[in-house]
Image 1: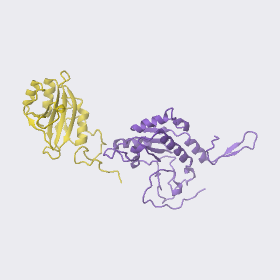
Image 2: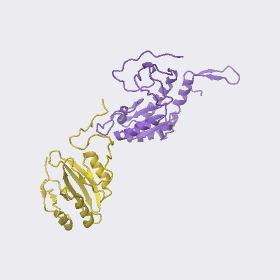
Image 3: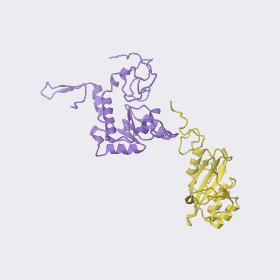
Image 4: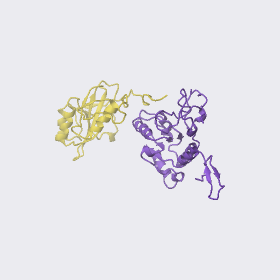
Length: 171
Length: 223
């Protein structure tokens, strides 16, 4: 598996104020050129921030840097990495249309601060992430499964989950 | 009334008033039922669109007395599961089925409802017969309206052959619940058929044959 190279230097497309704010939060920026990504995938700046203060970082971007829209929120499972999951949030500044991808790494069973108090759109997205990956979000108002039945056993989008399910009802 | 397809209908035209008809309660009830099958379409995906085409003017399901699609299970006779059923939706479907009054029939329309179709995947039910008994399976992805109409005509034939009135009102104590098809569960409804005692008495066709079902005892004939 090719890994993404990270650099502390923010890409030029990031607003300088936001870049300075994130630099104070130990942000590591994805170096798309170094990992050989196609040019059309290099446009959106993405940065990795520590799990501590995840909600504070997003709150600061929303309050002081105009990132007032949570476009997407999901997670990725890398079973061979030490903190197994990567939680991803895509923010947009609806005035300048700057888009920023924020990522943080989470170990299995560790809780992530919820973004729902900041963005209403995080509500169902975090429920989906919880439903598919089993990542709990602290501070979420109603953290229940959203796609699967409530009594479902397992986290379907984890890599070790069988694609056909548990075959519970089958012959 | 003068339906030529109704079996057991004997006409006597002796008197000047125009005569009278002799029949059995069973054939009368079957004749009424088969010509007024009100479907509850559970349209879950593209098969639901194809069912709409079947009901619309070009194919016109109402020619067979089935145009009254009811979206209340209390008023429906036929549960037509059209589309991909997920496990989360399966609870809704079984609830709808339980709320339907007897007698009731079920059609699995299309590959997804019959077997999961191309979705061999964790959220998709691999055939609705994991949850409820099915009378007919319609192949196709989705089936053409012709196939749906053909299935509905087959369903009419089956209803016409329904022999539940002739069965013993009370099943033998040790009779198996079902042979070759529908399980008649006690207390499901006033008109639930008695336990099927013999494979001759099966009133459900098109069900998947079950391996290892023993042949039941001879049916108890009662007058």
